[in-house]
Length: 245
Ligand SMILES: Nc1ncnc2c1ncn2[C@@H]1O[C@H](COP(=O)(O)OP(=O)(O)O)[C@@H](O)[C@H]1O
Ligand SMILES: [Mg+2]
Image 1 (cartoon, rainbow, N blue to C red):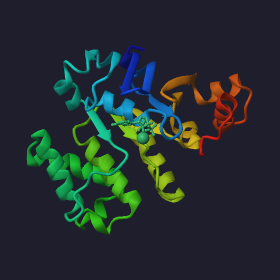
Image 2: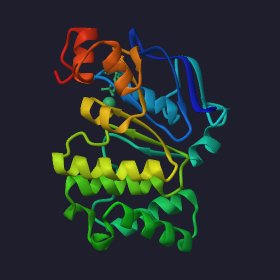
Image 3: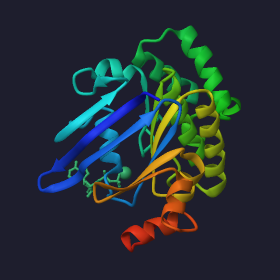
Image 4: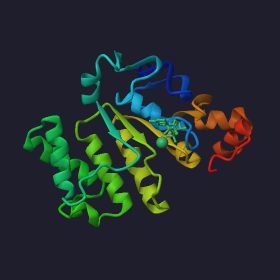
C-alpha cells in the first residue's frame, strides 16, 4: 500500500550528538506503527521532526506525499499529535479544553460541540467533562490529550509514549481506546519503551537505539527472526541491554 509517511536517511544532530542518525521507515495507511527504544534513543526527536517543530539536520521526510518543511501548514491540519507531557489547561473543564483546541483550528462551535461530544464519549470522559481538569487522574488527562489530538479528524495520529507514567489499569483502558481509534481508520505512529505495548498495539515497528534503527518488522516476525520469546528478549539479544534500564 502507498505509505502516508516516508522518512529517508533522516537525521538530527545536536552539536556533536547524533540524536537521530540516518533512519529510514515508512508508515502505511491504516496501520499502527511503533518506535520502540530506551530513553534517549531518539524517539521524541523523530516525532518532533515529523510534527515540524524541529528541522532535520539531513535526509528526507514526506507526509501525505508532501515534503514536511515546505508544506508544514497543510500537513499539520491533517495530523494529530499528543506529546509525552500533557498540555492541558488544568483550571478549566475538558469541554473548555476542547473549545480552545477547536478555536486554534478555527472550527465553529457547532462542529466543536458535535465532534467534542463524540470524542469525549469515546474516551470515557463525557460524564466528567464539566469538571476542571485538575480533578482528573493521570489516565483521564492522557485520554483528554488524545481527544484534543483527534478533534481535527487527523489522518495520522502521533503519540509520544502514550502510557508512560500510567498505572496498569489506565494503560489497558488506553490500549483499548487506541484500538478503537485505529479501527475507525486513523493511522497511528507511537513511541514507547514498553515492549508489551508495542507487541499489543503495533502492526509493524522499528527498534531504535542511539538514533539508529537496529531492527524492524512485525512484533511476531521479530520474535521469530531472533528466536526469542518476546520483544523484550529481542532487544536484549540485539543490544545486550535491558530496555527498562
Ligand atoms: N534540544 C536538545 N538539545 C540537545 N540534546 C538533545 C535535545 N533534545 C534531545 N537531545 C538529546 O538527544 C538524544 C535523544 O533524545 P530524545 O529524542 O528525547 O530520546 P527519547 O525520546 O527516545 O527518550 C538524547 O541524548 C537527548 O539528551
Ligand atoms: Mg522521549
